[in-house]
Length: 124
Image (cartoon, rainbow, N blue to C red):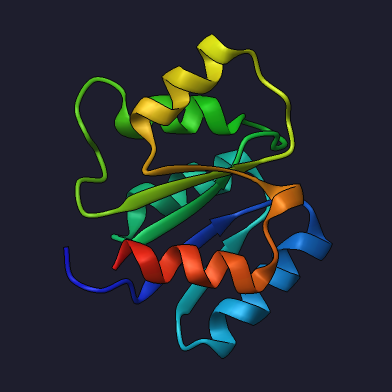
C-alpha cells in the first residue's frame, strides 16, 4: 500500500473528533469526519480511504458491526487500513476478534494527537 493520504474518522465524541481532525489536517492528511455509525459505514463503502479511524461505541450502528461487515467474510475495503479507537473495556475474546479484523487497536485515553500521528506514520 502506498502512503496514507486520505483518512475517514468515525467518531461521535465531538471534542475527540475535532482534536483528531485538526491534528491530522495540520499534518497534511485529507480527512473526512462522520459522527455516527450508519454514516461512517456508508462513507467507508462509498470512497476508498487509505485509513479508517473507527470508534466502537457509536450512535445508530456500533463499530464492531461496521468492522464485521467491512472485514468479515470478504474484505469490502481491501485498500484501507483500519485503526480501532475505543475507551470501551472489552473482554479478551471480543477484543481478539476485533483485532483480527483491524490493523490496530488503540485505547483512546492513551492516545494523544501526537501519538496518533506517530502511529499513522508507522503504518506507511
